[in-house]
Amino acid sequence: MRVGLSFLSSSASLLTADLFRSSHLPLKRLLLPSISPNQIPARPPPPCRRPLTAAFSAMASAYKPEDARVPPALQLPTPPVSKFKIGLCQLAVTTDKERNIAHARKAIEEAAGKGAKLVLLPEIWNCPYSNDSFPLYAEDIEAGGDAAPSFSMLSDVARSLQITIVGGSIPERLGDRLYNTCCVFGADGNLKGKHRKIHLFDIDIPGKITFKESKTLTAGRHPTIVDTDVGRIGIGICYDIRFQELAMLYAARGAHLLCYPGAFNMTTGPLHWELLQRARATDNQLFVATCSPARDSGAGYIAWGHSTLVGPFGEVIATTEHEEAIIVEEIDLSTIELRRSNLPLETQRRGDLYQLVDVQRLNSQ
Image (tube, rainbow, N blue to C red):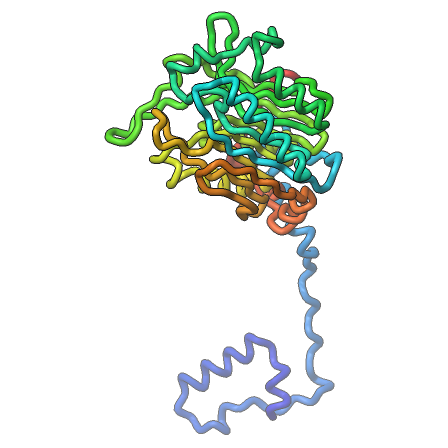
């Protein structure tokens, strides 16, 4: 009897259970007769189901992940090297420009001596960070030579050490305009890219800090991404890190690493500096490196310090405190593909709901 019941269809079993609950008749009156194995109807074949991978593929197609980036995101390029060492030079800055230049050169040489193939300097490392100082210390990068001693030093040391330098930032003069500008030099000493700070630092936190870069500086107009001997690098300067769209754009252009020379202050630094770095790295699944000036408590603008390297899973690989320091740490670019396979965000985006438009790339097509 129990053998027979075990082969009944699910609907018959439910019906029997309902009868048990609703009837007061003796149990023997409700049991169904025995069924011999030869009388058991064949189980109907299961419905045809597509493999899970096909279902996922169809779902992804419906969500149009490729449309989430306009133009479509570029494939991550194969880097020239899979591993290299980066040097972050957190420098003390004074009012003596010649001293600042010589000091920066010495730090770059020390980082290279420890194996760094890419060196990153801080924001505004050749003069104090102030609207009064920017016009006085600005350099004509286009002219070069004696008109741009900071620029010339970076070019010379990159060539002599045969390394890539992301030269922090310095005030740049172009005609009657001033910019906060980062220059990138290749191992041959040639200028490979120049980023003018896109988002100017204009903030007002009553009782804490007020600063308006726009009083003296002009905002840059173009994102900057550079192919170097160690990989593809997207450049931002300090306040640029707050705008995730720029980092997303660089990731869509195939960046392996984002470099942000920056000088967060004692109000926003403790709250946001590390948070923003880890967010940019995690959201875009790439490396983020930052470099700050060392803290000078007697300066008009006091930097937070804490230069940092973050990996594509949002992990802090290396950092320092607020004093002068040189960090040299290895970057393993293979972990980008690993983390993107762990969390395949690129194929899970909803291009049917949102898009990031790279205006510069779109207009160049």
